[in-house]
Length: 132
Image 1 (cartoon, helix red, strand yellow):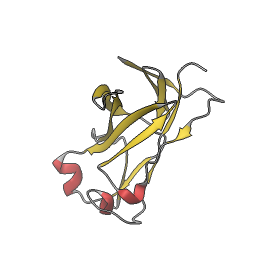
Image 2 (cartoon, rainbow, N blue to C red; image 1 turned 120 degrees about the horizontal axis):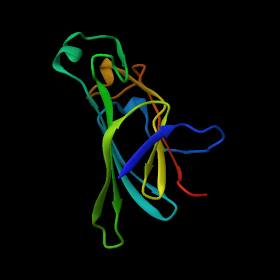
Image 3 (cartoon, helix red, strand yellow; image 1 turned 180 degrees about the horizontal axis):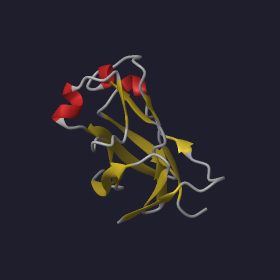
């Protein structure tokens, strides 16, 4: 189970290797506090939102489009256990087991939807210990 709350001041997050130049969807493993987490990020956009062909989307959209994040924790034997699958909003912190997650920048350029390159996307994420 995960909970969302406002981003507290002074809390320091380790940056995740989210890069707008890699576009969406994207996936990567990340080792934090001796545990490997597997992240997957993708946009949930309607056919109408895509057909409008804007230069970029500032997620979340009033029409419903948003960023979705999935996190799995790797077990010592190499298996994976799902921890998190949900829509994420900028400015919120998500409590996920032993970690906190935030995704403050969610600008997706049209050319980075299933495409690579410097097209103006700005995506970022961070991870922190839930209990210091």
